[in-house]
Amino acid sequence: MPTLAITWLGHSSFRLRTPGGKEILFDPWYTGNPVFVEASRPKAADLILVSHGHSDHITDAAAMAKATGATVVGIWEVATWLGSKGVQHIEPMNKGGTITVKGLRITMTDARHSSSFDDNGFVYLGEPAGFVVKLENGQTIYFAGDTSLFGDMKLVGELYKPDIAFLPIGDRFTMGPDTAAMAAQWLGVKQVVPMHYGTFPLLTGTPELLEQQLAGTGIEVLKLKPGETAQ
Image (tube, rainbow, N blue to C red; front, side, top):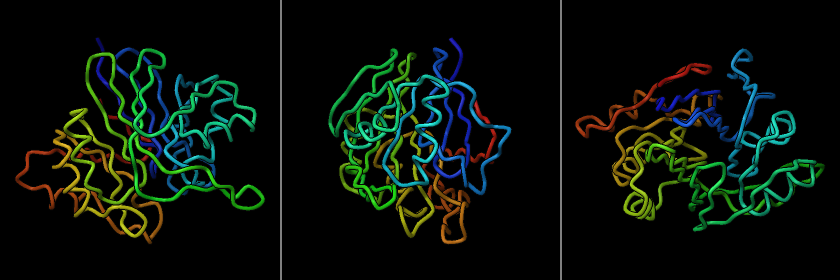
């Protein structure tokens, strides 16, 4: 069976090709994303997972779902709002719930942040969330979304035993490298994929600072450039 392929599309946007060949998009934001590489724009998707409603995570979700026929998974308010925008295939859920979509087991977890979209006035889009996704080969990933450090990350590690964590490190609006390093250790992961950094000057955290915080732990930091893929 092929291995997991991870493409960073900038900020918190990722394209994953699972070992079973499914194409997953996380938090698609391409339009107006200053670090997005147009040549890396996904041409296909089976699933789109949206962590919350801020424009730097959801802007291209409806367009990509319509273009690809992908199923969008999100918290109730996000999913139903996207449905009102013409997205045909939605799977609303909420924190603590688990669903199986296209052969992948998806659990929604807590996240500590906010969630709204300026749609001719701010629209409340539920609470922010994270996702645990169990892949076809048994490998498990945790996509934290935008969040601060919170104690129940220890429970995510205990319950789901993720192998890889996608963690925000930019600071100011999310965890910084210091608290992201603590999260990685609580989760018990082997690898961290840093996100939500480098897009704007306000986001000061860097993968190098995260590596310093994780020195001696054995946890690998996967450093990607926008548009770059790792397997």
